[in-house]
Length: 356
Ligand code: COI
Image (tube, rainbow, N blue to C red; front, side):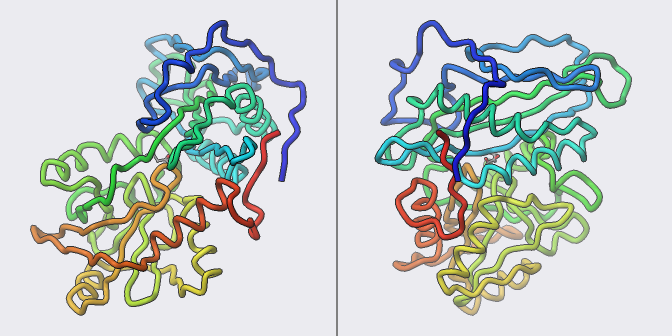
């Protein structure tokens, strides 16, 4: 797939690039920003012409509704550069669609389809030198929308701002992670906004995650909000479990994000001949499988996290270690997915999207 850019985006270039200040050999995740950003405003029932401008602060009235009622959604994507310097995105239309699904749930206006892809392509072409080529690095792309309209009335804003900002980034996690299965707090409930990429879904996780960090874990595995009986997702990623040779993941629902990496892993695994079951996974089943020596692997999957192996989990004050396998699904699936993303392998699924 490729995408041709039309002339509908206004471009204001930076005077002096900051790229020489960046150590591309040691990229943190999400801390460095590129020279430009895309911005587009909504008011009086319509979106303005998108503009690519030098990366800059945004000034808001203190009564802007984002500050009070949290109308804020985002997406997470990555841009990759192959050995020939060609630029690739991975299933970007899924992100574009999901942004508008989130927008609808948060009573925000949908972004016109063309704006997302044209804006993103224009921005990436302008900041293409910022797409890292160092191992395990990529350009993290963060499209987001927030309520910029003013007033303290608890009702949807009448003005919004859509921005795409980019960050040359290394891995999200430093290595294998240890997770805590949550027994008290909940990330989402039926009928809520758990399936949307709403900023508040993440804010609500920080406190329980801090408690888990104090106990020596890096992430929380969220469970259902009623009985905390079934594992759901980890907030920054969906969760996969290998019991015997079967790969399991929870079905998406009102409470679980429909992750692009999650659904790609399911397809790639099946294509590799791995048996995949999408069904509810109880904590009891995990522990029983662990006791029988059948719980072979757990890993997270997400745009930022890619495929992140889990070394063990905590539950009811007990730690459960996972074995170190020479041949594991996590490594094999990560290789397959990233080979497609970086244009190192055939893309039989048609997921790669060239920006040119
Ligand atoms: C992503 O994986 O891109 C996300 O949006 C998750 C975020 C917590 C980094």
